[in-house]
Length: 131
Image (tube, rainbow, N blue to C red; front, side):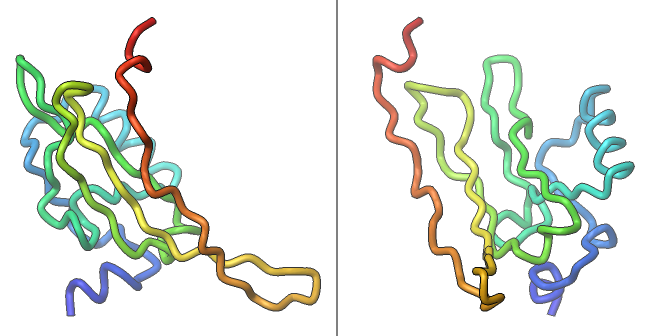
């Protein structure tokens, strides 16, 4: 029942956001204030696929959640799934995040068509990390 409400409710502000990161710095508070002021919702920790709020960054000085997916009220109902994957440790200290959206567009006759275009992922090449 709770997971169903998360997926289909248009206002997620009542759903408590979970996070494995127990520290909130001043920039984190600023982000939360911005989200509240603009009716933007953080998917991390309150969406099917990441209900526990997995960490997204593993650094020598600590682990944290610093990579987010933010959506406005207008697109919140379109979110099907959000997850945090395992990092490519030799390329980054950050985990990849994924979001699956149901998007629809109208053609000139006002018929609704489903958009099946979404990014499967990026192909990382070692040469991309050199400047």
